[in-house]
Amino acid sequence: MIEINLIPQKLKKQKQVQMLILAGAGIGIVAVAILIGIYFLQIQKNVEIDRKIKMIEAESKSLADKIDEVKKFNAMEDVYTKKKKVADSLLFDQALWPKLLDSIGEMLLPDMWLTKIEQTKEKDEGIVINVSGNTLSKVIVADFIKRLEESKGVMDIKAAKIADAVDAARNMKVTNFEISYLYKKDRQ
Image (cartoon, rainbow, N blue to C red):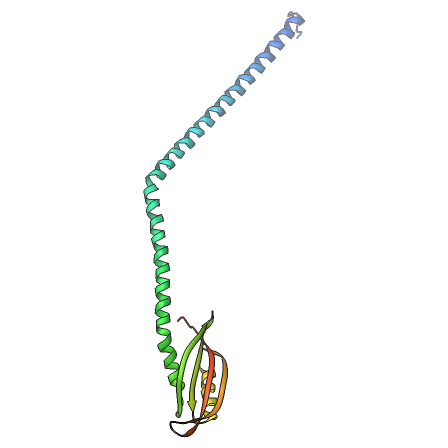
């Protein structure tokens, strides 16, 4: 079979160019349609985000009074905590001296008399206590110091003075002593 092309060559090329132009226009139209679709999707996303922002702002406004209430409650709780801490400290300090005097009373030996118990300093670890008194011998003072060393909460014991003297009222020989130690504040 023989094919004879009766269409002039020029028309043939022109038809091919037209097809190419139509294909390019078609691709261009599809690309523009896709871009328009993306644009409308972005607009829709922006509208959705704006709607969510408005909902959150409305919820925030409705919760503003509750947030203020919580802030007031937190402030009241802080004040309460501070007051409780002060009250606990006062109660602890109030109970400290009876506890201290009981512990010293338990350590006292026969033939031993205390003439003075005083607090001289307060440190972070506890309070410095000075104990003065009289005994019939230096051995009793040594036993008292040993009991202090074994006592819980007593630290840094210093014997400031141990001296023999005569008690004029009773006409007898006595040993005067002064002992200083740190009594640890135990907040239990």
